[in-house]
Amino acid sequence: MKRILAINDISCVGKCSLTVALPILSACGATVDILPTALLSTHTGGFTGYTFLPLDEEMKKICDHWETLGLRYDLIVSGYLGSRSQIEFVKEVRRRFLKEDGVFIVDPVLGENFKYYSGFDERFAADMGTLCALADYILPNETEARFLTGEKEVSRAFEKLTALCPHPVITSAEEDGAFFLCYEDGGERRMPLKKLEGSFHGAGDVFASAFAGCIANGMPQKDALALTAELCYRAIVRTAREVPDRKYGMNYERELYLLTDAFKEKN
Ligand code: PXL
Image (tube, rainbow, N blue to C red; front, side):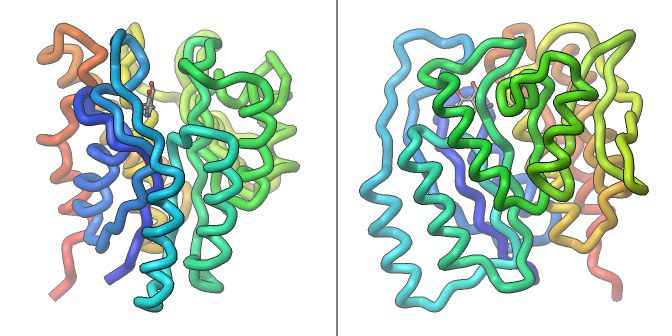
């Protein structure tokens, strides 16, 4: 069984970050350990008056304890980081806990709809870029690709990202319809993304978690992206039907069979 470390916050309400990563990565048949970066009453995208407890000191103590257990990970996936010092600490976590042939995936959570999430700015984005430079895969949305590169045009942003990391994926972009971009056969490849109008909070976290779970299972990037995109689409369709207030996140749970079926143990 593969052992994955998910580094992300715990937003108690609003289905994102670790509350999404745990079930999705587990559905992919992995053992999932967590390193929480912050504890929030809700995520910051659309709620007001939320509580926010950064866990910087606790993260260090947790990792020192893990060191005594000799833990090593096949894959580490990082998401929402609460401060610039946490970005530096994640680099250290990678150095200390990722197996030599392990995979490091960074979802550079910065913002959406061309706006930073609360508390983030250009300096934070620049530091996030230095973390992306250590990753095997990065999963920015169109907004984050722009903030990481300073490029407004998505293909130019993508080109800059390919210089940063071997496998950048822009998880959703729009230009005459929705698509995502990946790097294949030495060039940019645009894949049409089935999507409904509007914005779906938590979709990026569902995407990152499902993709990481597929990669942990040794799936080639192309197949991993196809399965991830299908899961996201089904979850979006269900969410559009069932969730009137989109800040409460995606109803992806009843679509997880796509992952459990794909990664069923062969007898
Ligand atoms: O979904 C990304 C995300 C993760 N964690 C927190 C957030 C957000 C986006 O709003 O606020 C705390």
